[in-house]
Length: 144
Image (cartoon, rainbow, N blue to C red; front, side, top):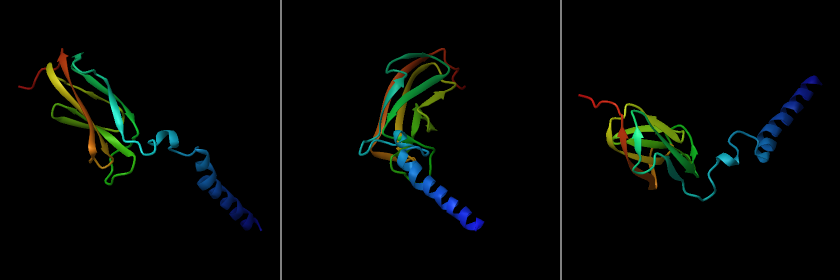
């Protein structure tokens, strides 16, 4: 008799976890984290601004992402999920946070390019990218 009671409680618990909690939006990755239905990913570069002069040698790039859930890279694309490629001139960095700090940036003019990509590193079609130019002062010494 005890065994039947335990099984009944397991069934109730599993039903609650699988069906009730998700319907309330209380499970992990609730709807607020999901991209809006039928909306294309987009972003705005918040920092630095086009043409800005930056005190080096470190430079933070910060963006505001819409309609894309940021996740670590994976082997296969996942609908509505991706990450960011931050480029400083020809150096690429990958992040699933909406910011990245480049270190050891040399004094002078630099190009920053940011691209939202699918979870498997492939570009969206069309690509979702923006570029800006900045000037760094007080940067690192260039390599010999």
